[in-house]
Length: 133
Image 1 (cartoon, rainbow, N blue to C red):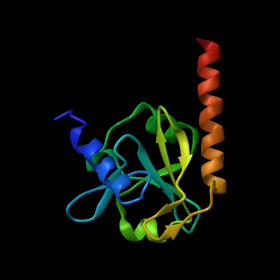
Image 2: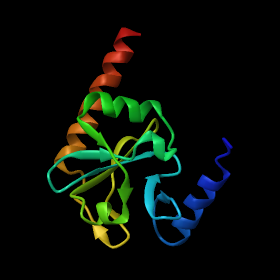
Image 3: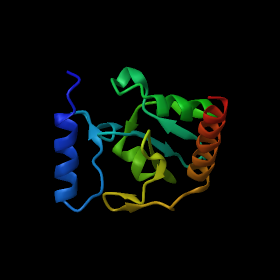
Image 4: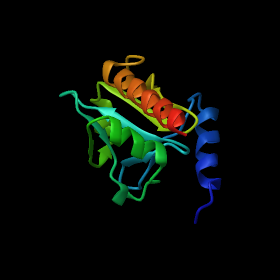
């Protein structure tokens, strides 16, 4: 289904628990995306990662643009990956690239260097595309 009802419910439930956003996961604990944004994490080696499309996440335009402007590895994401991440960020049309302050009890720098680089590169790409018309 293309309905966002379940995604919106997840967001409401997250906010009711004091969080700003939800992370959608599989029953087996794989992290997929946020209700209206793609999720990216920077591992301990400094590599930017995002879940692969074959995890049945949305193939968004913004996600595609981030993959175009940054070196990103597509691989499954688990809660352990986020727990050990150096940075986490979301990407969507309305947010562009937005740093994540924390996931559950884990805090992240806002924004970390990789997040800031992705944010700057995406903004430059968008401005370039707008100038070209």
